[in-house]
Length: 269
Image (cartoon, rainbow, N blue to C red; front, side):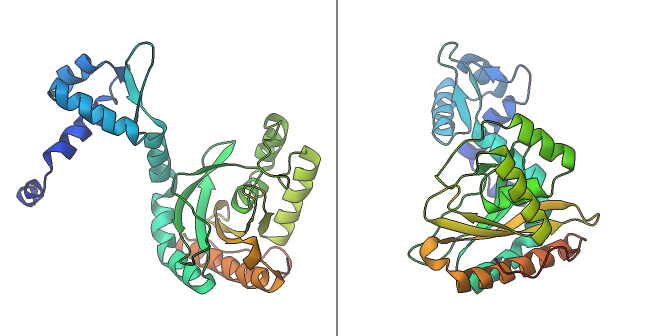
């Protein structure tokens, strides 16, 4: 197997991984000379690779010290690997089916930390007018169907901490909830009915509906959503997408060893 792998080895990619791997060692930021000394990559090659990695967001350079360190794109990849590997595998076929059934963009989103959520997988609509999505995209927890859903089903101390420490809540559109009292009421509604709706809270012209994915202990570990343009989000569209996304969330939950406890009234937005 090692011989077979060596046949497909790309030298430039191998050297780039050596450059990235060097940042695992303290102090995790290095000048060009230090990187060439520790990796064996020539100075010219290292410089060109660092510039390429910078363009992609994998590496950043300090303007004063001229040293390099890992960029936010690496953090996004790590977050997806840590938070979403088994989840993404379990959800893949269900997301395919949900996208095919609704014809809209489908997102799988999980908590990243106490303040934000991250997209770990998505399926983009094939329609000409569609909502785009990207793996690694981050969202504040007070806006959007999946982020609000994840906050609504978080442990009560986590909800209280967000309501207390998250202010002022950033406003993305005129529909973004920025008042803690209104946000608390919205979280209560989401928890009671078992799904979340976003009406142009993050982007104008975009509506979405999200349902919870649960693990074997019944904890909500992710949200799956259907996002559509407002012109395709009338009452009939919403009912169809709500039913579809809730069914998809139950299927993913079952694959994760969990189940939908059946909370919330029938799905009438």
